[in-house]
Image 1 (cartoon, rainbow, N blue to C red):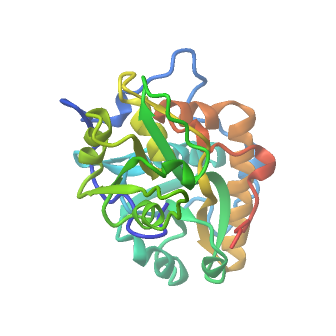
Image 2 (cartoon, rainbow, N blue to C red):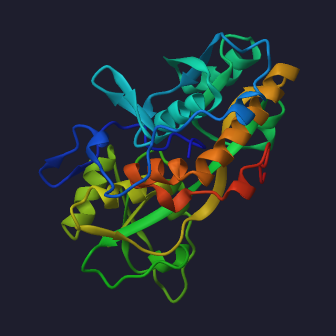
Length: 293
């Protein structure tokens, strides 16, 4: 969740296995991940934007949502954008930019869409519209053989937790209040790679990180890890558009397309492809500007 620094690292490494490209994940029997043109949804795209190439802003430094694989931007957000464009018959161009510049770029007309794991927040809704499409919080994983169960932050009491430095998880783990003389030992590492190794080696009992990334770490661990408990501090992600009439119309078109992707199975196929189905929203949850705070 791009609330603080949160996982600005590149690759997830488990033991000696290095993830070279997340796109190698496959799901047997999955629906198509490409989407299909839908004339009803496409009719919602404002006429001023039809036939143009929409500029999409993405900060490609947040795996598995969006990141660079060689010179290509990949991730489940990128696959969703491609499927949305196919559904709406839109042309678009991805721009790899600094996260903090995206909303200003939308306000200034440089970009029509911001697609970069934005947490939908009320403060941000003052500047842009959001189409909520996913939810993410803080997740926990343990070794596959572990009997440890995460119910809430107090579940960490008496144990060691591995986190990446500079994240909201580091702050939250350090703030846990325990009873009975127990404490939480927090080990922070400069990369998520080394935090994962701390759990796999038994140095820490829990790994604590963004929920969709926790799911991703488990999915590429070759059975070494498993998720435990449910994500906490869960907030919706939204794709951003401008507050102009055309921006609002575009947001409504994207919302309709998302619901179509849910109905035809494309949405879930994409999330399954990346191992991040835990944050899936139902079509009814895909609202405009649904910030919780």
